[in-house]
Length: 442
Image (cartoon, rainbow, N blue to C red; front, side, top):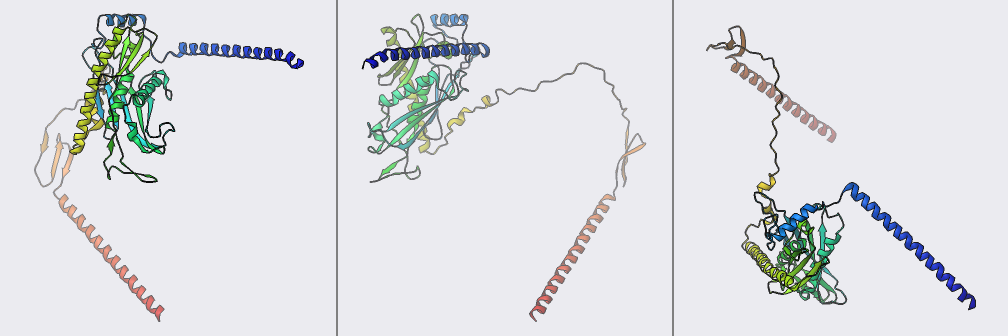
């Protein structure tokens, strides 16, 4: 025991030394990585071009004057448009696309696709279905996005959408149960960011809500040991039970305590942070999400909540009207355009350029002049056109038709003669074959 007690302090000192050396190596490695990243940023540049101090001051001054670059006021939203596709569960939401003489407002586009599959439920909630949210952020939408990586914006979007659809009671999850603790429906919401320009959560929420309201799942017959999924031709598909539609609204907060509704990407760079309010048309606050380190006053929160409730009323009415119109067209078997109506002719040919005229510099060119003289035309059996009475240019003979007929007759006679010869050869071969068979039989 005495030997062990003497060795323990040495062991502790050795362990502490190893831990200290390892921590020093980790710190040095992190410092080197930061230096490399700063060098790479200095050489290759940042993905998103930051705003200069003059631009930030200009944006902040415009907020103080209650005006914005795209001619909106600080409490105004961009125009929202929702289009549903030919297939059930597909919807495209757009914010913006306002064109005027002096500016072009950027457009935010998000496509949502809802699908379903039969899976095994969780052990805790065996009588409830599942909801899964997937987000695809393509670099084509924004230079800030990286292929295969969600980033902070993507993770925030997934977290908010899952919070709404799982914990806020948007869907009736119990109606998605097929066999308790054995089989349930899993609803998957795929969100594709096509074009990003601020307020990404707002547009994604509108697109996913429209897709869920437009989605139809197959009808199912539950048997004692299995289930039977019917096709759309056997039984009509069934819509999802949605209790309410929480609409997300983003408010930008400045350092002076002003709120900017539906900010763009450049406007977000001038803000202290953002406040996302999810509300429905029943005047219920479903979620609050704050990004950034800033304090909010009670008066500012009440203003944002009231604005979000009004926005939720408008968006809910918009989605309901679109779903009712789509159902009416499908019931009456009218033509449904889907996303094809977005391909306008002016968009397809808007970037067409006319060819430029290449004009060579002035230079002297030798020209050849031919004097015009009279043309003698005579009407005889043999028509001849003479130029200046010396050289014959065109000769049309009246005997050409006779010659042509003779050539045709000769060709026909040769063809008939060849045909007669072929017929005689076939007859000879047939007689020879009969004679051979007769000799073989004898």
